[in-house]
Image 1: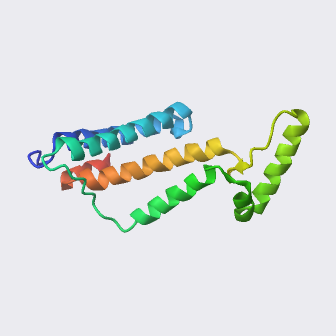
Image 2: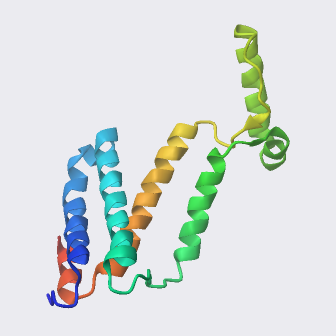
Image 3: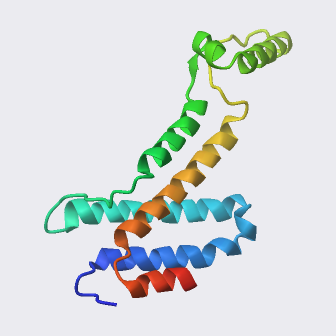
Length: 166
């Protein structure tokens, strides 16, 4: 591995990726909240380190990402997941998904019959269970972060071999 052309932060990021790949499967298959939260936090810290290195620590403060044709699809996918949890006016939610609108109105009627002081705000998301959608969004953002880190920091054949055979 030629360390003269690889920055110190890139080496830290590379070995962080190796650590994540090595530790990720120990968390009960990443089905426990502590396991996937730890992995997501580690990935987000490595992405933050990547951007700090590119913007503040490098000699030329410029973020040049390797351009890959799949980036627009990744960002469109993440936007669609985010769109499910953004509160929308009820008229827009009814237009986009009439079934979810109908179900949520029925739910609000049930809640209002139990607790009359609760008022319908007029805003609703397109998701039945926003917490699960948010957890999925964070997981997919971590996947995208690892992808971006690998294609932008792995520079040598030896690094590729280490990742592939780890």
